[in-house]
Image (cartoon, rainbow, N blue to C red; front, side, top):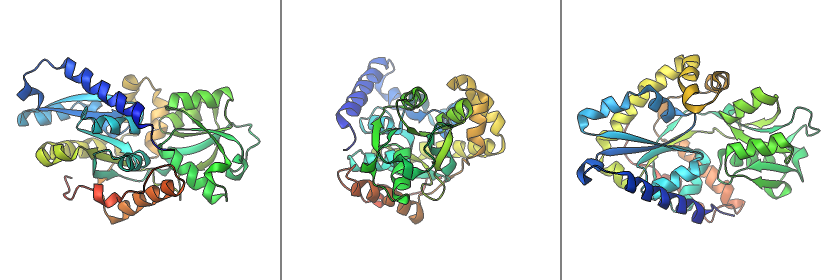
Length: 320
């Protein structure tokens, strides 16, 4: 099993066409628009909500367009299709994308966020430990960060991925629906969807990421765009540092800022914010080793066609 490339590439192509259809500016003006892909409740989402990046880029002659994606794999296919220039995704989607030949380079990484992913069962479930998942249906998406957590947790419990019945879903909403309806025995979720489910139903956490997955977010971009526009991306990271520093100190304010945008209750966002840190760091040898382990794990499980050399996709210059 590999990434469903035809579907996501079709999405990326369609999005590229829709973006092109919507452009009314002259070509030279269009080329000075930074197209950023982001996902719900993350660093770029906070930057968008703060509204400061547009002002910082204006003296450079650049504007900003923002595009929301439901998952990292789809965001990265849009990047590969040329529909966006820059975005973020979790560790596993980045590995799957590189294995599938997506043209993207790592620019920076976020701090570990192991409590932001978990495998859940219902509060009254007879399943008490990961080993009890043998033969059970688990809702998870291909190429998700929680798929890696699930693979590692099963390995820790002495099971193989083939020992469970993965119920493949396309987004977190479908995963939660399958879990809440009882169609599956367990689910893998990430924040803020994890926090939302914890507040809604108080499920049992079979395994969070601690000790198994650092669950990092990565900033990625099209290689040609980075090479031609390093000054623009340096400005982006400078503004990110300001919002990240603010977010670390003000979890309630982050929740209040994003709740109206996302349609997510502030209590959910506050829970998610309190268990993470937002500081971006260079992709060093240790982080490369983390990503390589993810790649090797999924190749061993025959879930990706090859184990790419992660270091080959790291941009050689720091923009932080």
